Image (cartoon, rainbow, N blue to C red; front, side, top):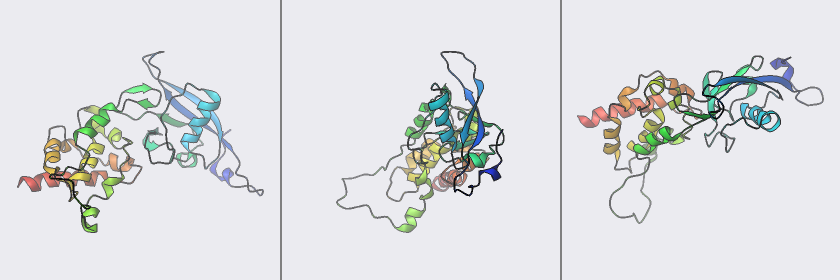
Length: 252
């Protein structure tokens, strides 16, 4: 029996009681079958436990073949992005109590990228788009003898897009990306924005030309899925619109 959230309150001894939660995980092993299947796992957990904690318990105690990515487990590396109850989230930042543990919690790989095994997807198409927008500072001339000065006002223009952790949650939540694997996707555009609006960078025109391609920013349909999915709170849709505006402004 699954406990209610009210039952997760500390008891008089100060202990937080455990409860039973079911994770319904989408499994895929190309060495076994070409078809994915769903498998239920039941674990004992606490309300303060995260989805990642539950996955660890399954892998360590029930089925060592369960495959998923994780690294820092603190919402910085972005490696454990997955679909939880139909929404892109980081497993390390999603508390069990926040996703209705009274019902089975569905866990599946992010969409739009080839599944390698279970919850692991092939990230190469994602990083190929990222590399194409040249995500580095482009300058001319010799190395400076002192830091390249930038005012707080200039820095503020792209501060939001520096927060990207390349988890692919935004890109893999985009319906255009699902249907068109050639679309650069929100994350690539966000990282282009970070340099296009950097006053120290001289490669803005090159990046805008790249993103002006038929698979660039004009493929965005402004559904706001990307903004909702971003675990860092980046205003992704706003950044995409600013890049579009920069293209038009520089063209005229």
